[in-house]
Image (cartoon, rainbow, N blue to C red):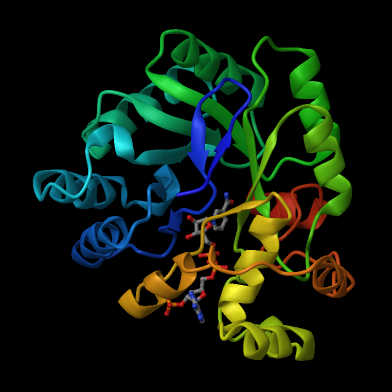
Length: 285
Ligand SMILES: NC(=O)c1ccc[n+]([C@@H]2O[C@H](COP(=O)([O-])OP(=O)(O)OC[C@H]3O[C@@H](n4cnc5c(N)ncnc54)[C@H](OP(=O)(O)O)[C@@H]3O)[C@@H](O)[C@H]2O)c1
């Protein structure tokens, strides 16, 4: 499994398994177990997904079956912004430990940059310093807010998990992430679903035919080859295998440039700095 070394020295797999929408406990547990069996070594969950317990159960089952040891799997969870006040944040993290059934967590992210981000970040810094959380980071944070967070705190975010895919490549943001040594992790790397037209892009279809791969594999390979790690979600076993089988071919520089030119700079889930999005997320309209 290819890994990326984060700023604090911790190694993070460049592909992981996303569990958003895997809310049914039995389905979530079984899919996490299957993902680990198929070779995934990073599982991405969040307090807001309501599935930390099922994720923990799937991991435990894989450990009990001898497929992995605890230290082989990188577990990411996130804190929801309504829990960013100090005491709520500690409570949320302690609840994640309990639900996941672990005594350390590999990475905890601030899910959205709303509310008392600074209080929550300082709680994360404490957990990072005492070693119970190995890496701390943010999600959905644009470069301006990232720089501000860095300027007024001690520990820099190791990762920014942000919507990134063919139509929303974030090349401008990536330059800022590189400047501050923050790893870029793509959520919704398949554009949040197969109905998306990016699977039918002519260039994507042609590359899929050329390399004997599927459009999803081309889209994931494109990101990983651009130094962006990915956490695709699927509930289907055949797609779990498909999505992780992207390390036996390489796109040429010209092919990478063709795909880069298809950027529309348009997120699907939304931009954190979009005032209407923030208003609606925070219940102000
Ligand atoms: N930090 C954040 O704010 C945030 C926001 C959103 C997501 N995330 C994380 O990122 C993960 C991935 O993002 P996402 O779930 O939004 O979207 P995604 O991974 O881009 O797309 C998932 C969708 O694509 C389908 N799919 C998966 N593999 C496929 C394949 N090989 N061919 C065709 N269709 C395929 C899945 O359907 P099936 O299940 O039917 O296969 C599902 O509908 C989430 O699960 C979550 O862990 C984080």
